[in-house]
Length: 237
Image (tube, rainbow, N blue to C red; front, side):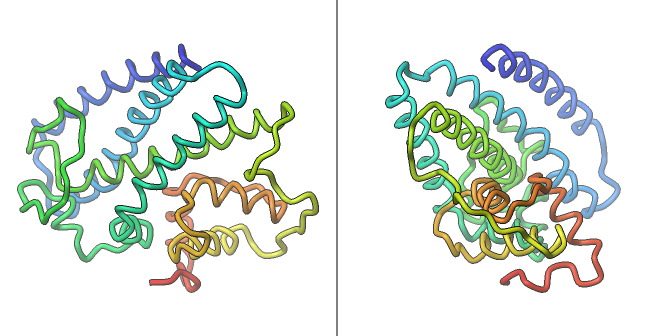
């Protein structure tokens, strides 16, 4: 995984620079296109770059011994939860597919609106940065990192460790549609029904509880829900 994450980081960094060079020479046809790029396109690429960089550092600093590893991975999960808990308003805005603040969040040259600029050290170019595109990328990366960390902890559990992240011994099977399942998990996440649990962690757990296998890609889930006649009747606004 160390070699894979390092190779992926180098490749994605090069692609990221190519994308930036293209956008700096490109004129968006309207504000809607600009919002789409900074809300959807750029964060999807940037999130993978963040993810593989984080995985590389996680594995490089991973201690020896199962007890220390479990403590180490658990602390990393806690850090993700703390990060998300400080940004719940924005997370709910993004995950509920809201758009009324998009022109402030995802258009260049807008006032900061007290949004903390958290981005790569070299990525301060106002022509390639908005108030919140990096926040979206970090949110998507944290979803992937949570899933990765949970998987690594499950591997430790499979090697004889017992912990709080196990799954119920008796499973019941979800009888509704996959779309209804995705929508229900999103509603629980949106309402923080189980506390500060990352979406990917909750999603993975509920799949095991209800004996169902579905796509965990949040962007794809939201796209699937949008095309229904009634996109999200269960989601809490």
